[in-house]
Length: 460
Ligand code: SF4
Ligand code: SF4
Image 1 (cartoon, rainbow, N blue to C red):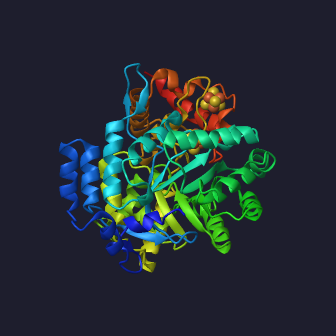
Image 2: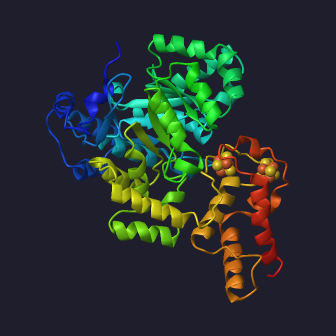
Image 3: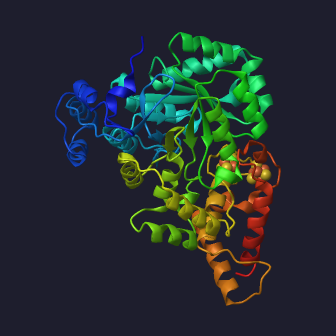
Protein backbone atom coordinates (compact mmCIF):
# COMPACT_ATOMS: atom_id res chain seq x y z
CA UNK A 1 0.00 0.00 0.00
CA UNK A 2 1.46 3.34 -0.99
CA UNK A 3 1.40 5.82 1.88
CA UNK A 4 -0.43 9.12 1.84
CA UNK A 5 2.79 11.03 1.43
CA UNK A 6 1.89 14.63 0.99
CA UNK A 7 -0.39 14.74 3.96
CA UNK A 8 2.59 14.25 6.21
CA UNK A 9 4.45 17.21 4.89
CA UNK A 10 2.15 20.15 4.51
CA UNK A 11 0.55 21.79 7.43
CA UNK A 12 -1.83 24.49 6.25
CA UNK A 13 -5.06 23.45 4.57
CA UNK A 14 -6.99 26.30 3.00
CA UNK A 15 -10.03 25.67 5.09
CA UNK A 16 -8.39 24.86 8.36
CA UNK A 17 -5.02 24.23 9.91
CA UNK A 18 -4.67 20.50 9.63
CA UNK A 19 -1.82 18.09 9.56
CA UNK A 20 0.63 20.09 11.58
CA UNK A 21 0.45 17.43 14.24
CA UNK A 22 1.05 14.78 11.63
CA UNK A 23 3.92 16.73 10.15
CA UNK A 24 5.50 17.16 13.52
CA UNK A 25 4.98 13.53 14.29
CA UNK A 26 6.75 12.72 11.09
CA UNK A 27 9.67 15.07 11.41
CA UNK A 28 10.01 15.46 15.19
CA UNK A 29 9.04 18.43 17.26
CA UNK A 30 11.53 21.23 16.69
CA UNK A 31 10.46 23.92 14.24
CA UNK A 32 13.02 26.56 13.26
CA UNK A 33 12.29 29.74 11.33
CA UNK A 34 13.03 29.49 7.64
CA UNK A 35 15.88 31.97 7.92
CA UNK A 36 17.50 29.61 10.36
CA UNK A 37 17.06 26.66 8.04
CA UNK A 38 18.43 28.61 5.15
CA UNK A 39 21.46 29.75 7.08
CA UNK A 40 22.15 26.15 8.00
CA UNK A 41 21.75 25.05 4.38
CA UNK A 42 24.05 27.71 2.99
CA UNK A 43 27.14 27.13 5.05
CA UNK A 44 27.36 23.38 5.20
CA UNK A 45 27.02 20.50 2.76
CA UNK A 46 23.40 20.83 1.76
CA UNK A 47 22.32 17.22 1.74
CA UNK A 48 23.39 16.25 5.21
CA UNK A 49 22.22 19.43 6.84
CA UNK A 50 18.95 19.46 4.99
CA UNK A 51 18.26 15.90 5.97
CA UNK A 52 19.14 16.67 9.57
CA UNK A 53 17.08 19.81 9.61
CA UNK A 54 14.05 18.16 8.06
CA UNK A 55 14.20 15.34 10.56
CA UNK A 56 13.70 17.95 13.23
CA UNK A 57 10.52 19.09 11.57
CA UNK A 58 11.85 22.17 9.83
CA UNK A 59 9.20 22.37 7.14
CA UNK A 60 7.17 25.54 7.11
CA UNK A 61 3.50 25.30 6.29
CA UNK A 62 2.17 26.54 2.96
CA UNK A 63 -1.36 26.50 1.57
CA UNK A 64 -2.44 23.11 0.29
CA UNK A 65 -5.45 21.69 -1.50
CA UNK A 66 -6.88 18.25 -1.12
CA UNK A 67 -6.54 16.05 -4.14
CA UNK A 68 -9.78 14.33 -5.07
CA UNK A 69 -8.20 11.03 -6.09
CA UNK A 70 -6.23 9.99 -3.02
CA UNK A 71 -7.23 12.67 -0.54
CA UNK A 72 -3.70 13.98 -0.12
CA UNK A 73 -2.78 17.58 0.66
CA UNK A 74 -0.89 19.03 -2.31
CA UNK A 75 0.86 22.39 -2.07
CA UNK A 76 -1.05 24.96 -4.10
CA UNK A 77 2.30 26.12 -5.49
CA UNK A 78 4.23 23.49 -7.45
CA UNK A 79 7.87 23.59 -8.48
CA UNK A 80 8.32 23.24 -12.26
CA UNK A 81 11.65 21.85 -13.46
CA UNK A 82 11.38 23.01 -17.06
CA UNK A 83 13.60 26.06 -16.71
CA UNK A 84 16.19 25.31 -14.06
CA UNK A 85 19.31 27.46 -13.54
CA UNK A 86 21.99 26.66 -16.11
CA UNK A 87 25.75 26.98 -16.37
CA UNK A 88 28.27 26.45 -19.19
CA UNK A 89 30.24 23.20 -18.80
CA UNK A 90 33.85 22.55 -19.84
CA UNK A 91 32.76 21.62 -23.35
CA UNK A 92 31.00 24.95 -23.66
CA UNK A 93 27.46 23.51 -23.49
CA UNK A 94 24.72 24.92 -21.28
CA UNK A 95 23.77 22.36 -18.65
CA UNK A 96 21.75 22.46 -15.44
CA UNK A 97 23.57 24.17 -12.59
CA UNK A 98 23.22 21.38 -10.03
CA UNK A 99 24.35 23.41 -7.02
CA UNK A 100 21.90 26.22 -7.63
CA UNK A 101 19.11 23.76 -8.42
CA UNK A 102 19.81 21.80 -5.26
CA UNK A 103 19.62 24.99 -3.26
CA UNK A 104 16.30 26.01 -4.86
CA UNK A 105 14.63 22.62 -4.52
CA UNK A 106 15.83 22.31 -0.93
CA UNK A 107 14.46 25.72 -0.12
CA UNK A 108 11.15 24.92 -1.81
CA UNK A 109 10.83 21.66 0.09
CA UNK A 110 11.73 23.25 3.41
CA UNK A 111 8.95 25.78 2.73
CA UNK A 112 6.24 23.21 2.22
CA UNK A 113 6.24 22.77 -1.56
CA UNK A 114 5.60 19.09 -2.10
CA UNK A 115 4.83 18.88 -5.83
CA UNK A 116 7.78 18.74 -8.26
CA UNK A 117 7.13 18.56 -11.98
CA UNK A 118 9.53 17.45 -14.68
CA UNK A 119 9.30 15.85 -18.14
CA UNK A 120 11.29 13.55 -20.39
CA UNK A 121 12.44 16.33 -22.70
CA UNK A 122 13.10 19.20 -20.29
CA UNK A 123 16.69 20.45 -20.49
CA UNK A 124 17.37 17.88 -23.20
CA UNK A 125 16.56 15.04 -20.82
CA UNK A 126 18.70 16.34 -17.96
CA UNK A 127 15.82 17.69 -15.85
CA UNK A 128 14.51 14.25 -14.84
CA UNK A 129 18.01 13.12 -13.89
CA UNK A 130 18.79 16.19 -11.78
CA UNK A 131 15.36 16.24 -10.13
CA UNK A 132 15.82 12.55 -9.26
CA UNK A 133 19.31 13.12 -7.85
CA UNK A 134 18.15 15.94 -5.61
CA UNK A 135 14.76 14.65 -4.52
CA UNK A 136 16.17 11.32 -3.42
CA UNK A 137 17.53 13.16 -0.38
CA UNK A 138 13.98 13.64 0.85
CA UNK A 139 11.81 10.82 2.22
CA UNK A 140 9.99 9.51 -0.84
CA UNK A 141 6.62 9.59 0.84
CA UNK A 142 6.81 13.32 1.62
CA UNK A 143 6.72 14.74 -1.89
CA UNK A 144 4.93 14.18 -5.17
CA UNK A 145 6.93 13.68 -8.33
CA UNK A 146 5.26 14.28 -11.68
CA UNK A 147 6.68 13.53 -15.08
CA UNK A 148 5.37 13.16 -18.62
CA UNK A 149 5.54 10.61 -21.39
CA UNK A 150 6.88 12.28 -24.57
CA UNK A 151 3.89 11.72 -26.86
CA UNK A 152 5.92 12.45 -30.01
CA UNK A 153 8.29 9.52 -29.28
CA UNK A 154 5.60 6.91 -28.61
CA UNK A 155 5.56 4.87 -31.79
CA UNK A 156 4.76 1.41 -30.39
CA UNK A 157 3.89 -0.43 -27.20
CA UNK A 158 7.53 -1.49 -26.77
CA UNK A 159 8.71 2.09 -27.13
CA UNK A 160 6.14 3.27 -24.57
CA UNK A 161 7.34 0.62 -22.12
CA UNK A 162 10.98 1.53 -22.72
CA UNK A 163 10.31 5.21 -22.15
CA UNK A 164 8.41 4.63 -18.93
CA UNK A 165 11.09 2.37 -17.52
CA UNK A 166 13.82 4.80 -18.57
CA UNK A 167 11.98 7.60 -16.75
CA UNK A 168 11.75 5.61 -13.50
CA UNK A 169 15.49 4.94 -13.73
CA UNK A 170 16.40 8.52 -14.56
CA UNK A 171 14.35 9.82 -11.63
CA UNK A 172 15.59 7.03 -9.32
CA UNK A 173 12.09 6.23 -8.10
CA UNK A 174 9.77 3.21 -8.06
CA UNK A 175 6.65 5.18 -8.85
CA UNK A 176 5.38 8.51 -10.09
CA UNK A 177 2.70 10.35 -8.11
CA UNK A 178 1.37 12.14 -11.18
CA UNK A 179 2.05 10.78 -14.66
CA UNK A 180 1.01 12.77 -17.72
CA UNK A 181 0.68 12.12 -21.41
CA UNK A 182 2.65 15.11 -22.55
CA UNK A 183 1.28 17.98 -24.63
CA UNK A 184 -1.80 16.36 -26.19
CA UNK A 185 -2.96 18.70 -28.90
CA UNK A 186 -4.94 16.62 -31.38
CA UNK A 187 -7.25 13.63 -31.45
CA UNK A 188 -5.03 12.03 -34.05
CA UNK A 189 -1.87 12.30 -31.93
CA UNK A 190 -3.63 10.76 -28.96
CA UNK A 191 -5.07 7.88 -30.95
CA UNK A 192 -1.82 7.09 -32.73
CA UNK A 193 0.43 7.29 -29.69
CA UNK A 194 -1.76 5.86 -26.96
CA UNK A 195 -4.95 4.20 -28.17
CA UNK A 196 -3.76 2.32 -31.26
CA UNK A 197 -0.45 1.19 -29.72
CA UNK A 198 -2.00 -0.10 -26.48
CA UNK A 199 0.23 2.23 -24.45
CA UNK A 200 -2.78 3.61 -22.57
CA UNK A 201 -3.72 0.09 -21.47
CA UNK A 202 -0.14 -0.51 -20.45
CA UNK A 203 -0.11 2.65 -18.33
CA UNK A 204 -3.36 1.51 -16.73
CA UNK A 205 -1.58 -1.70 -15.74
CA UNK A 206 1.28 0.34 -14.31
CA UNK A 207 -1.30 2.23 -12.30
CA UNK A 208 -2.72 -1.02 -10.97
CA UNK A 209 0.86 -2.08 -10.11
CA UNK A 210 1.39 1.11 -8.11
CA UNK A 211 4.04 2.59 -10.39
CA UNK A 212 1.65 5.38 -11.38
CA UNK A 213 -0.52 6.84 -8.65
CA UNK A 214 -2.52 9.24 -10.81
CA UNK A 215 -2.78 9.36 -14.58
CA UNK A 216 -3.68 12.41 -16.63
CA UNK A 217 -2.51 14.52 -19.53
CA UNK A 218 -1.18 17.96 -20.30
CA UNK A 219 -3.13 19.78 -22.95
CA UNK A 220 -2.55 22.27 -25.74
CA UNK A 221 -5.45 21.62 -28.09
CA UNK A 222 -8.85 22.99 -29.02
CA UNK A 223 -12.29 22.47 -27.51
CA UNK A 224 -13.18 19.52 -29.70
CA UNK A 225 -9.99 17.71 -28.72
CA UNK A 226 -10.60 18.37 -25.03
CA UNK A 227 -14.16 17.01 -25.27
CA UNK A 228 -12.92 13.91 -27.06
CA UNK A 229 -10.09 13.21 -24.62
CA UNK A 230 -12.28 13.61 -21.56
CA UNK A 231 -14.52 10.86 -22.92
CA UNK A 232 -11.73 8.41 -23.69
CA UNK A 233 -10.58 7.48 -20.22
CA UNK A 234 -11.27 7.90 -16.52
CA UNK A 235 -8.49 10.44 -16.06
CA UNK A 236 -7.42 11.48 -12.59
CA UNK A 237 -6.60 15.09 -13.57
CA UNK A 238 -5.77 17.34 -16.51
CA UNK A 239 -3.05 19.97 -16.80
CA UNK A 240 -4.03 23.07 -18.77
CA UNK A 241 -2.51 26.41 -19.66
CA UNK A 242 -4.41 28.94 -17.60
CA UNK A 243 -3.88 32.58 -16.72
CA UNK A 244 -5.99 35.72 -16.88
CA UNK A 245 -5.02 36.39 -20.49
CA UNK A 246 -5.72 32.86 -21.72
CA UNK A 247 -8.98 32.60 -19.79
CA UNK A 248 -10.63 34.01 -22.91
CA UNK A 249 -7.85 34.12 -25.58
CA UNK A 250 -6.97 30.39 -25.48
CA UNK A 251 -10.31 29.51 -24.03
CA UNK A 252 -8.91 28.26 -20.74
CA UNK A 253 -12.34 28.97 -19.28
CA UNK A 254 -13.93 26.28 -21.45
CA UNK A 255 -11.21 23.75 -20.60
CA UNK A 256 -11.47 24.50 -16.89
CA UNK A 257 -15.25 24.15 -16.88
CA UNK A 258 -15.27 20.89 -18.84
CA UNK A 259 -12.69 19.36 -16.51
CA UNK A 260 -14.67 20.49 -13.49
CA UNK A 261 -17.84 18.95 -14.92
CA UNK A 262 -15.99 15.63 -15.13
CA UNK A 263 -15.38 15.84 -11.39
CA UNK A 264 -11.60 15.92 -11.72
CA UNK A 265 -9.13 18.66 -10.89
CA UNK A 266 -6.96 20.96 -12.99
CA UNK A 267 -3.26 21.38 -12.71
CA UNK A 268 -2.14 24.72 -14.11
CA UNK A 269 0.87 25.51 -16.27
CA UNK A 270 1.91 28.91 -17.60
CA UNK A 271 0.23 31.00 -14.88
CA UNK A 272 2.43 33.92 -16.01
CA UNK A 273 2.16 33.05 -19.70
CA UNK A 274 5.87 32.48 -20.13
CA UNK A 275 6.70 35.48 -17.94
CA UNK A 276 4.65 37.97 -19.97
CA UNK A 277 2.24 38.64 -17.11
CA UNK A 278 5.14 39.37 -14.79
CA UNK A 279 6.43 42.14 -17.05
CA UNK A 280 3.34 44.05 -18.07
CA UNK A 281 3.38 47.35 -19.91
CA UNK A 282 3.47 50.46 -17.75
CA UNK A 283 -0.27 51.19 -17.92
CA UNK A 284 -1.36 47.70 -16.90
CA UNK A 285 1.32 47.45 -14.19
CA UNK A 286 0.23 50.85 -12.88
CA UNK A 287 -3.38 49.69 -12.45
CA UNK A 288 -2.25 46.70 -10.40
CA UNK A 289 0.23 48.74 -8.36
CA UNK A 290 -2.39 51.32 -7.51
CA UNK A 291 -4.70 48.64 -6.15
CA UNK A 292 -1.93 46.91 -4.20
CA UNK A 293 1.33 48.86 -3.88
CA UNK A 294 3.07 45.91 -2.21
CA UNK A 295 2.08 43.23 -4.73
CA UNK A 296 3.88 42.51 -8.01
CA UNK A 297 2.16 41.67 -11.33
CA UNK A 298 3.31 38.07 -10.84
CA UNK A 299 1.56 37.88 -7.50
CA UNK A 300 -1.69 39.08 -9.08
CA UNK A 301 -1.37 36.48 -11.83
CA UNK A 302 -0.80 33.64 -9.37
CA UNK A 303 -3.65 34.77 -7.18
CA UNK A 304 -5.96 34.89 -10.19
CA UNK A 305 -5.26 31.30 -11.18
CA UNK A 306 -5.26 29.83 -7.68
CA UNK A 307 -8.51 31.58 -6.79
CA UNK A 308 -10.29 29.02 -8.98
CA UNK A 309 -11.29 26.30 -6.54
CA UNK A 310 -10.94 23.39 -8.94
CA UNK A 311 -7.24 24.12 -9.42
CA UNK A 312 -5.23 21.59 -7.43
CA UNK A 313 -1.82 23.14 -7.92
CA UNK A 314 -0.13 25.89 -9.92
CA UNK A 315 3.21 25.21 -11.56
CA UNK A 316 5.91 27.79 -11.58
CA UNK A 317 9.43 27.49 -12.97
CA UNK A 318 11.36 29.40 -10.34
CA UNK A 319 14.98 29.53 -11.36
CA UNK A 320 16.06 32.42 -9.17
CA UNK A 321 15.70 32.51 -5.43
CA UNK A 322 13.91 35.88 -5.37
CA UNK A 323 11.06 34.48 -7.48
CA UNK A 324 10.80 31.40 -5.32
CA UNK A 325 10.67 33.51 -2.16
CA UNK A 326 8.08 35.84 -3.60
CA UNK A 327 5.89 32.97 -4.73
CA UNK A 328 6.19 31.21 -1.40
CA UNK A 329 5.02 34.43 0.25
CA UNK A 330 2.03 34.57 -2.08
CA UNK A 331 1.06 31.02 -1.21
CA UNK A 332 2.09 30.92 2.44
CA UNK A 333 -1.44 31.78 3.51
CA UNK A 334 -3.18 32.06 0.20
CA UNK A 335 -5.82 34.75 -0.12
CA UNK A 336 -8.24 34.31 -3.04
CA UNK A 337 -9.18 37.39 -5.05
CA UNK A 338 -12.33 39.23 -4.07
CA UNK A 339 -14.81 40.75 -6.50
CA UNK A 340 -13.10 44.17 -6.52
CA UNK A 341 -9.74 42.54 -7.20
CA UNK A 342 -11.13 40.58 -10.16
CA UNK A 343 -12.25 43.93 -11.53
CA UNK A 344 -8.76 45.37 -11.09
CA UNK A 345 -7.37 42.47 -13.14
CA UNK A 346 -9.98 43.02 -15.84
CA UNK A 347 -8.88 46.66 -16.14
CA UNK A 348 -5.19 45.74 -16.23
CA UNK A 349 -5.93 43.15 -18.90
CA UNK A 350 -7.70 45.70 -21.03
CA UNK A 351 -4.64 47.98 -20.81
CA UNK A 352 -2.29 45.09 -21.52
CA UNK A 353 -4.16 43.99 -24.62
CA UNK A 354 -3.58 47.35 -26.24
CA UNK A 355 0.00 46.28 -26.88
CA UNK A 356 0.75 43.42 -29.13
CA UNK A 357 3.31 40.89 -28.03
CA UNK A 358 4.02 37.60 -29.74
CA UNK A 359 2.16 35.12 -27.50
CA UNK A 360 5.25 32.93 -27.07
CA UNK A 361 5.61 31.11 -23.75
CA UNK A 362 9.25 30.11 -24.33
CA UNK A 363 8.46 26.38 -24.21
CA UNK A 364 10.95 25.69 -27.06
CA UNK A 365 8.84 22.91 -28.60
CA UNK A 366 9.59 24.58 -31.93
CA UNK A 367 13.32 24.11 -31.48
CA UNK A 368 15.80 23.37 -32.87
CA UNK A 369 15.52 25.38 -36.05
CA UNK A 370 17.68 23.84 -38.79
CA UNK A 371 18.74 27.31 -39.83
CA UNK A 372 19.96 28.33 -36.39
CA UNK A 373 17.21 30.77 -35.39
CA UNK A 374 16.74 30.90 -31.62
CA UNK A 375 12.97 31.26 -31.90
CA UNK A 376 12.05 31.75 -28.22
CA UNK A 377 14.91 34.21 -27.74
CA UNK A 378 13.89 36.27 -30.77
CA UNK A 379 10.32 36.47 -29.48
CA UNK A 380 11.22 37.22 -25.87
CA UNK A 381 13.59 39.96 -27.02
CA UNK A 382 10.90 41.43 -29.24
CA UNK A 383 8.35 41.23 -26.42
CA UNK A 384 10.69 43.06 -24.05
CA UNK A 385 10.81 45.90 -26.53
CA UNK A 386 7.01 45.90 -26.86
CA UNK A 387 6.59 46.19 -23.11
CA UNK A 388 9.05 49.09 -23.02
CA UNK A 389 7.19 50.74 -25.88
CA UNK A 390 10.36 50.63 -27.96
CA UNK A 391 9.06 49.09 -31.18
CA UNK A 392 9.17 51.66 -34.00
CA UNK A 393 6.06 51.96 -36.11
CA UNK A 394 7.41 51.26 -39.58
CA UNK A 395 4.27 52.66 -41.17
CA UNK A 396 4.44 55.90 -39.21
CA UNK A 397 6.38 59.13 -39.80
CA UNK A 398 10.17 59.06 -39.79
CA UNK A 399 10.48 61.44 -36.88
CA UNK A 400 12.89 61.56 -33.95
CA UNK A 401 10.90 59.06 -31.93
CA UNK A 402 10.93 56.60 -34.82
CA UNK A 403 14.70 56.86 -35.24
CA UNK A 404 15.47 56.61 -31.54
CA UNK A 405 13.25 53.59 -31.08
CA UNK A 406 14.58 51.91 -34.18
CA UNK A 407 18.20 52.28 -33.08
CA UNK A 408 17.42 51.03 -29.57
CA UNK A 409 15.50 48.10 -31.07
CA UNK A 410 18.42 47.12 -33.29
CA UNK A 411 21.01 47.56 -30.52
CA UNK A 412 19.00 45.45 -28.11
CA UNK A 413 18.64 42.63 -30.64
CA UNK A 414 22.34 42.69 -31.51
CA UNK A 415 23.34 42.71 -27.87
CA UNK A 416 20.97 39.91 -26.86
CA UNK A 417 21.05 37.51 -29.80
CA UNK A 418 24.12 36.26 -31.70
CA UNK A 419 23.87 37.09 -35.43
CA UNK A 420 23.58 33.43 -36.43
CA UNK A 421 20.47 33.03 -34.22
CA UNK A 422 18.57 36.14 -35.33
CA UNK A 423 15.40 36.33 -37.39
CA UNK A 424 17.14 37.08 -40.73
CA UNK A 425 18.30 33.43 -40.83
CA UNK A 426 14.70 32.23 -41.12
CA UNK A 427 13.99 30.66 -44.52
CA UNK A 428 10.26 30.32 -43.77
CA UNK A 429 10.54 26.53 -44.08
CA UNK A 430 7.59 26.28 -41.64
CA UNK A 431 8.82 23.19 -39.74
CA UNK A 432 8.72 24.96 -36.38
CA UNK A 433 5.15 26.13 -36.86
CA UNK A 434 3.75 22.61 -36.67
CA UNK A 435 5.12 22.20 -33.14
CA UNK A 436 3.94 25.43 -31.58
CA UNK A 437 1.20 24.81 -28.98
CA UNK A 438 0.29 28.51 -29.12
CA UNK A 439 -0.44 28.32 -32.86
CA UNK A 440 1.97 31.15 -33.60
CA UNK A 441 2.70 31.72 -37.26
CA UNK A 442 6.43 31.69 -36.54
CA UNK A 443 7.75 32.39 -40.06
CA UNK A 444 5.34 35.32 -40.43
CA UNK A 445 6.39 36.77 -37.07
CA UNK A 446 10.06 36.32 -38.00
CA UNK A 447 9.44 38.18 -41.22
CA UNK A 448 7.67 41.00 -39.40
CA UNK A 449 10.44 41.40 -36.83
CA UNK A 450 13.09 41.16 -39.49
CA UNK A 451 11.48 43.93 -41.49
CA UNK A 452 12.03 46.33 -38.61
CA UNK A 453 15.60 45.20 -38.09
CA UNK A 454 16.34 45.37 -41.81
CA UNK A 455 15.28 49.01 -42.04
CA UNK A 456 17.61 50.09 -39.25
CA UNK A 457 20.49 47.81 -40.22
CA UNK A 458 20.54 49.46 -43.59
CA UNK A 459 20.58 52.90 -42.03
CA UNK A 460 23.55 52.30 -39.79
S1 SF4 B 1 10.29 28.72 -40.32
FE1 SF4 B 1 12.13 29.88 -39.87
S2 SF4 B 1 12.37 29.77 -37.67
FE2 SF4 B 1 10.95 28.15 -38.27
S3 SF4 B 1 12.24 26.32 -38.50
FE3 SF4 B 1 12.02 27.29 -40.52
S4 SF4 B 1 13.79 28.63 -40.67
FE4 SF4 B 1 13.59 28.11 -38.51
S1 SF4 C 1 7.15 29.89 -30.68
FE1 SF4 C 1 5.64 28.47 -29.87
S2 SF4 C 1 6.74 26.52 -29.64
FE2 SF4 C 1 8.27 28.12 -29.92
S3 SF4 C 1 8.87 28.71 -27.86
FE3 SF4 C 1 7.24 30.10 -28.49
S4 SF4 C 1 5.34 29.16 -27.76
FE4 SF4 C 1 6.91 27.57 -27.68
